[in-house]
Amino acid sequence: MTSNNKSKDLVLVVDDSPDSLGMINDALDAAGLTVLVALEGNQALSIANSITPDIILMDAMMPGLDGFETCRLLKSHPHLEHIPVIFMTGLSDTQSIVKSFDSGSVDFIQKPVNCDELLARMKVHLSNSRLTQSARSALDSAGQFLITTDKEGNFKWATPQAHQLFHCAGLSEDWLKQNLAFQLQPLFSHTFNKEKGIQINQGEKPIEIKFISENKNDEYLLRLINLERPSESQIMQEAFELTNRESEVLVWLARGKSNSEIAMILNISPRTINTHLVQIFRKLGVENRTSAAILALKKLEQYFTAH
Image 1 (tube, rainbow, N blue to C red):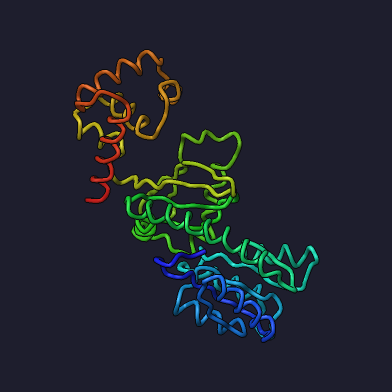
Image 2: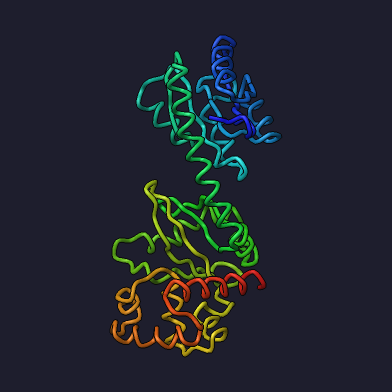
């Protein structure tokens, strides 16, 4: 799971059983992992707030704060919500399994723990976690106003730029958790045109939220638009001296839409789209769609970074 030229993965093991801790510690140490140990929930919370682990192994049944509540509390901290948690427990009833996932875990393994199976599962979840964090870091560095929600519209994550926009609009973290899902309900309807957005007028300035994509985990990626700023189309129009229609075509081109899709969105013919693209390429000094899209995206990134 680690290599000699990379830092070791850090595993927090939370278990009140010395025998179980000893066995798991030996297996993880032999696999080249660094192990931190907590004997109960509050101690786990204290350690995780000081040193962020790469993965957490959690006993479900512990005196005082049990594993389910400990996991929920860990996931309530923004810097810990992405950390994969695997439950280890002798419980095997359906209710306990469901409870473990509801509390925020990614996996469930029964005691007595088979260390080879545990290591195999950890490898998968560590890899998935790194991919997720890499994608989010890329979005953060790109200056995008993006958020994610679950399939009910409950707030999960946002780039720093999106957090800042919510803050400027006077929409607190509590508001996002309590009200965002209700505001987004129309967006998740099968009959809603996802090319349109949902306008939020609950704060000090209006914000529009638009659908981007849905992944296999029923997580939705959404984009925020500050309606007090010029639209992307207006930015394109001013930057490249385009007509209003040409700027609209360029925006949708930059979003990866095909000519037929752009024609349908703008309610014009594909032949007209081709005519606009000829003028767009000439004004931007490029020869193809890819070059035009790259220029448009760079211009938008420069504008939003500066403003």
